[in-house]
Image 1 (cartoon, rainbow over the protein chains, first blue to last red):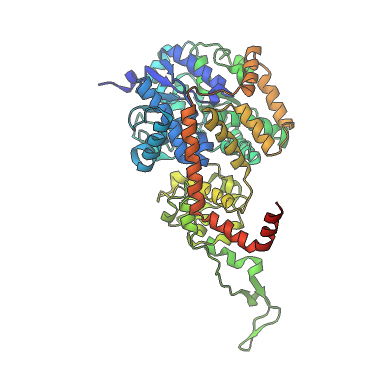
Image 2: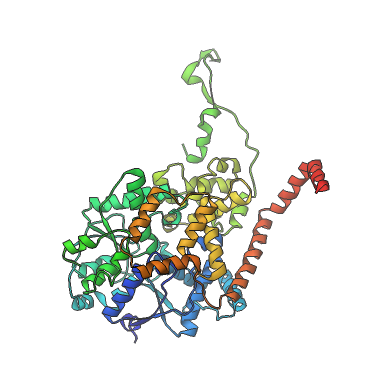
Length: 311
Length: 264
C-alpha cells in the first residue's frame, strides 16, 4: 500500500500568484526546504490563478472552474496524484472545488462546459489530492524525520503560530482533518506548532491561531484590517512571542503591512517579527537567511535572528 | 427584546405624553410612553427568492435564527451594528426598508468563514452577506463598494491573462477608487520592502508591473469565461426583475425621457 509518506516524496507544486509577487520569500523558502529535506517539487505547467476570494465574490462557480483547471493539468497532463499549494487561499480554493465537484451537480456541469470550451480535460473529483505545505512536510517527513535532518536549532525562539482562516474553515471542505491523533484539527490546528517545536522553537500559548487578519479588505477597508492585525500582533506579544510564524501570503503581507500602518498612521508600534514557517524551518536546516529570503520580508528580522544565534 | 423587534423602540417610534389621563388615572410622564401603532405594508415578498437567486444566498431559507453567525462574527466584534443574523431574518420576512438602514456596512464582511463553520443549518451566512452586497448594488441602493471595485479589478486581470500581478491590481484599485498612492504608511512600507532587495529582484518586480504575467494558452479559457459571465449577468437581472424595474422607471419618467430621446 502506498503511504502518505511515499506519495508526498514527489508532488505537483502550485505556487500561485502571490508567491510570484509579494510572497516571493515564501516561494523561495518552500523550494529550499523541499531540497534540504529531499522532497521533489514539480511546478504545475501553465497554471492559472485559483480564483482567490475576488473571483469567488463575482461568481463562485467561476472560482471552481479556475481551481479545477489547475487540478486537471496536474492530473491529466502531468499524471500527478498530489498537488501541494503553500498559499492558504490556493489550498482552500482547490479543496473547495474538490468538494463542490464531488457533491454539487451544477458545479460539475459548469466546470465540464467551461473546460470543453476552453479545450482542456475536465477535472473529475478524486483525480488528485490537494495538500498544504504543512501536510507535505508533516506527512512526507514528520517530526522525527525533521529532527534527524536538522543542522541547527531555533534555540528556544518563542513563536506564536498563526494559521489564519482559510486553512481550517469551513470544516466540510477538509474531510481529512479532525480525524483524531496524527491528523490536523480545524478547531486548534497544530502542524506548524509540531514542526517548529521539533526544530527547537518554544510555541507560546496563542489564542488567535485561526483569527482573521482582515485580508479580504486589506486595501478596501484598511482601518478594519489594521484593527484586526493589531489585535493579533498585541496578543502574540502578550503571550510572550518574539516571532509570529505564518503559512499564508495574504496573512503574512497583511500582518507586515498593517504593522507598519498601525505604527505610522495610528502611532501604535509593535515589535514582534513576522516570518514564514518555511523560513524558520530552513534556518534550522542550515540554510542561510538569504537562501530562505529573510531579506525579502518587510518585517526586518535579520539582526534579531543573528542576535539569537539562529541565522 | 428580540433584535428584530428593536426597531419598535427607536426614538422616532415612541410617543411620550407630558399629561395623559386614561380611565381617570393620571399616567403622565414616563408611564405614558407608548410604542406607536404601525402598519408595515411595504414588505418585499420576493426578497428571500431574490437573495437565493444570487450566488451564495441559495440556503438563506434554512436559517432558524440561532445567532451562531453573529456570535462568531469577526466584524461584529469590532462593530456591533454588523449583525448577520438580523439581516438574514429581515431577508426572510422581506423587510427591505430595515435592511437599507445598514446598506453601507454589509459589504464589510471579511469572509473569515467563522459563521459558516458555526452554522448548524448550513445557511452559509458568509455567502448570504455576499449575495446581499450584490443585491444592494444590482438594485441601485448603493454604489459599488471599494471591495467590489477590488474584486472587479482583480477578476478582470484573471479573466484576461489567467493570473494576476499584485502591483498592477493595487495601482488600478487605487486609481479607480480615487486614492493617492502618496500615503505615509504606504511609502514607509515600500521603503522597508526595498531595503534589502538586490537589484535583480527589483528589476523583476518593476517589469512585472509593466508586463503582465500570463498563463500561456489562455485564450480558450478566456472566451469560455467571458461567455459564462455574460450569461450569468443576464440570469441575475432576470431573477431580480431589473429589466422590468428599468422599464417601469422609464414609463414613470414618461414625457421627459421621450423629450430627451427626441433631442438626441
